[in-house]
Length: 148
Image 1 (cartoon, rainbow, N blue to C red):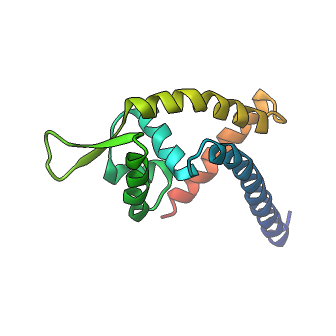
Image 2: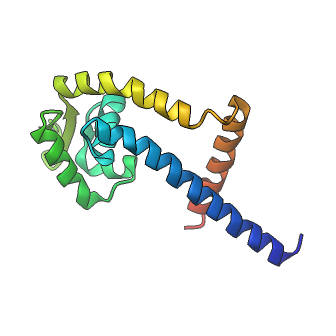
């Protein structure tokens, strides 16, 4: 394959990957909006549910959200009673976000349906195809990260 053909193939892959992500993400977000949360709120709540209390400064990197948006999202979730801020006992400069009992009950109710929704969206791929996709996308992501 010539260099020009490889470039065209790379562009085609980029477009295909972008379109697939867009449609899967849109369909997944439809369910999330139906829960009454914005996808970023859902992401923060899901992170806290699965990983426990997190420093506010670290949340953005874990759910791919700009650090400036974290305070806004945390404020909204706190007003809904789904999380609370707690001071770090060992470092006064650090504040943690922690899921509340109301938040835990909420995510325990909605997460299984979210998980099933994702499963259905990706059901056209076999288990082996999913594993191959995971390996290839990890390889791609890590190789690009290493370029920085």
